[in-house]
Image (cartoon, rainbow, N blue to C red; front, side, top):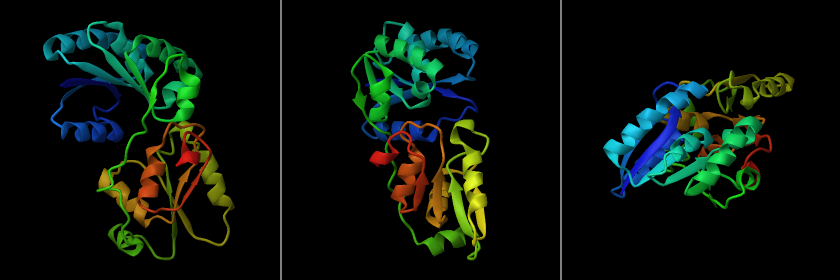
Length: 245
């Protein structure tokens, strides 16, 4: 079987939760290739359509697996190859993009939602709920003292790991900053989750005193699942499927 993965990439890098999923299915002998959408403007998607047609012609996949609704709509415009769309959250939680995602969902062969909440609000077509998985070989508990030593953490500081970049608006950094400011009696360092590789993230989750997510909205946040896998204490807003985890 041959699968073409269609997803957006701002930097030319593939999102870890997509790459890890693909790496996993390739162990079963499935052939996979990527087509990346560079940029996020409507022009970026429209200008990628000829590239998609060429890729379909040259690679001749059995399935196109599109990640997020905009990629799903682009993939579904062509009618030669069946399309499966995975909806991750921002494509449903954003009211404008949700309209496009609903159109895409009616054109695709099958739809995957990473949480039951997304499935409930997203489409008039049935889909399956499959949250993104966690690599338990990589995200696993290690001794807190060992992880802190590896990262050169000081013993007298409480380290709180924020779920993303401080500049990512939907992650609501201002609430996290306010909560830390109001905490009395501790020396606290709030760590921005930005620029770390996957092994470093696993070490951070084992070294941190707390994993903090203050997002306005989420789908099925990997940050929370990976924190659970590392036995890191968590405080989170009630978004996505966090309450179910």
